[in-house]
Length: 557
Ligand code: GLA
Image (cartoon, rainbow, N blue to C red; front, side, top):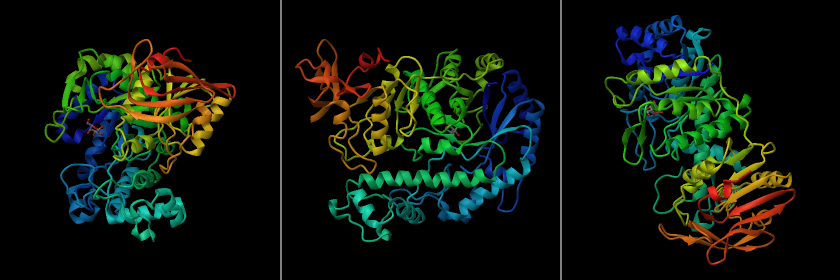
């Protein structure tokens, strides 16, 4: 069976609409709906009063129609009574401003009051609906991602740092605090990376993201511990999200991902990348066959993130969109949302109901199908810590890591697992590694083992420049690639290094001195642009510039 459906917010509509909703769902082949994501104020209208009557009736209607439910805990949007009585549970931004109620995702996970309230509503739901046959999956929270810089988070950060580094000397050494007189004399002096005068310490910033990923995970795990059955949360992607999804994937029963491509151009390539990454997270975390669920995507449209304009896809596109996910191992395609609310900030967000002419036939066509199991000979390493690290303003160049990884992914033929760096590589014949700036000793060792064992590795410029604390590691890849980087050249937009034959390198150029490697492709003026090197039983290619990567990856493996 393939799941087909979406977020359903019946509480945003009069009850008279519900039977029509359910009848339409049934005829459209909908078999799973996510209910209750933003229903906290409806379920708990006051601190000590609960109203589950409406949810009982919704679940009964759905169950009668044979439609499964993914029941959410509503903790992503605390109700006004909560925020009014606990203003200190609101997040504080980098500038020290405490945010106020008025949107959603306005919470600080370090607040004991917020945690208690979250567990309480989760426990109430668990107690009432444990064993309800309509419930197929529990959905904790929504798109974890709110960062906070308050004093409580500062205290939590210090505990986390003590645990990570053990002592202050190790912290000072890891963060390079002799630079700009940042040496800490006690853990109490360490703050979150709040707004500061000039460039912040990049290692401090990176550790705060790591800490926050763990702080959010703790909030998820506490809720998970009170819920019966299979539990997940929907991962949201984007450079702003302080969540290391590869690590979180081990704590969900099914990896679930929301996918909103940033542009209508090449949206299918972007969806393919997300799908291969979701499967990679699932596989690396040990989920059977790398199965994963597309929890949300936009029906019939893509919101262009640069302009903010929602652009419709050509009529009939939904089948191709669904297939981009299903052919890559998704166990279901779910949309946000079934029916748009009449009011509120997402009243103009596309929904399934107006598109049922197209989505109905798609949903019914999926009825006889089962999820596919994907076996890929090729892996692309993609690391969210690297994504964060590449965002640092202190770097000598702006490099869009995800866009680069997406281009490399697109150039590969056949199925590809997009894997976190922690994943075992033994089953792949080809591993490609774009701009893996941050490489720990474990990652260095894993790549060398892979190649020694006969694998082909393609590694790109910008890789292996720092360790996990962002300390520079000059020459760390030299033995592997059979070359040293004599000079690193950053190119302005529009500036190129013409290549022999045709094409050009842009953005970045590593001038290589070959030490065992030979050039596969040179610049027009004779410098190596792509090299090959035998290492153990395998081969390493190094790509020294940003070029049409299809030329290099197209023929592999
Ligand atoms: C996210 C959220 C949904 C909704 C959509 C809009 O994915 O989870 O609640 O806001 O974005 O695209």
